[in-house]
Length: 128
Length: 184
Image (cartoon, rainbow over all chains, first blue to last red; front, side):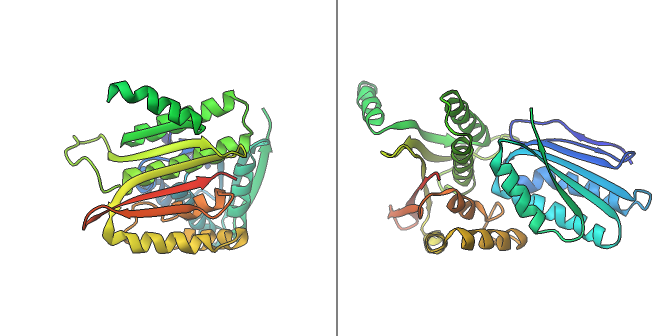
């Protein structure tokens, strides 16, 4: 599989999914004009990646400074997709990274964590 | 009209208005206006939580204008995205808290549904809003929604008091919608 990479814009995050290391990263801000259009290639890639039996352990690092309500729905769909993979016995880790002063990002991470069951959801605080 | 601008300027200043915009709104305008408000508030050392709330409410309101204002450009060339007419205001209440308000035309047939949603949110407390948000986030959006259908709930959660809103009938098909959110 080829690596999936998208440059960040003002309203959409940098995305880097590496099929070799099985480390997926989404970083930046997320409030694109049309959220489903923006993220649909991401879901397509992930579906193919997850159906590939070779990758046992998958790690998703998310560092989102701000996201709008449409992105919130999209991220929930993304975590649900990973959660059902984890339910099949696969090791899935999500690291939700937030700056120590970004209380909103921390609270949003907590709410996502409450809504998943099988994957490991870590809240990771970082400082400058 | 040009000679009246000073009058508008003074009126806005006296009311504590920080930003007033009336005109075509596109995604680029959402990024620009919300971005410059954030920079200005940061430069004035506003609390990080206030900066984030104002930014967030402004994005939700302006994206609602882009998606739902009934006054829109129909001859846009490909690739420019959508553009619709509306207004936004950011200012401060007498107690110093920030407010974000928006106004745009909507179809009269949508008024009951919108008013119903907003009335429901006005009755909810913090915990109810959280539960409702989590429940709706898992549900498929309504057929008439172009987003996730979470924008109003998100704003209600950021609001320090029940959100104000108003509909003014303009003609058979059109009403003017306005709402105001005071950031927590």
